[in-house]
Length: 277
Image (cartoon, rainbow, N blue to C red; front, side):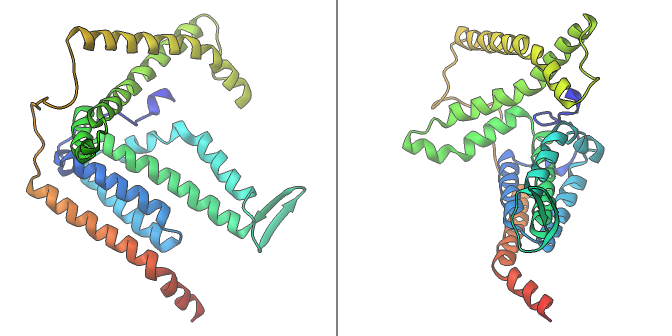
């Protein structure tokens, strides 16, 4: 399951999406995330689905590779769906069993929240799968550069993000090594119920945290030994410059944002009139 985590990993491919400026992809991911929590009906989610499918086709990243990242959050998705299913009050009660009540509103919220969570993971995975950590760091720093006027440590924030993304696959690999070492000594991580499996994972935490802190300390010492000083005055080996494709991508995002706002403002009225008719 650890190998199924795709967030923070880069998938090399020759696609238009890979060649786009990282600032465009950051803005696209932000707009798409906002749209997921703006749409509240089937028509809005249909628009988000079409947009996501088009982006996946353009990225040339195998769909199976993206879906693989959902296996690591199956438990989170189930818990989220159950909480929305049983804890959402409503007028139309479907099932009542003791203190548990399932309403039509709860069913709708559970389905929509589950779809939001899946689309959120897939959408953000596309950004990281098509952008290297260095590009993400440069794009984030460039996009947040106006905040440096009010003394916001933009470079430090971008560097923290870059290091965090780089540490994800490293920690996954380290966890896999520790698990195999403990399994060779008789540890069992696969049998038993969910609670037993969670308890079996506890012995992994101590060596994993020790390894993470050791790697972080080694990285800090290496940066200090090389006299690294981030911030103003640093130059880029590959400075970011917008190309024709980047402006076209911004136009597509503006169109999607316009559809999102229009449906948010007028869609409910139109949908209500059609249902009334």
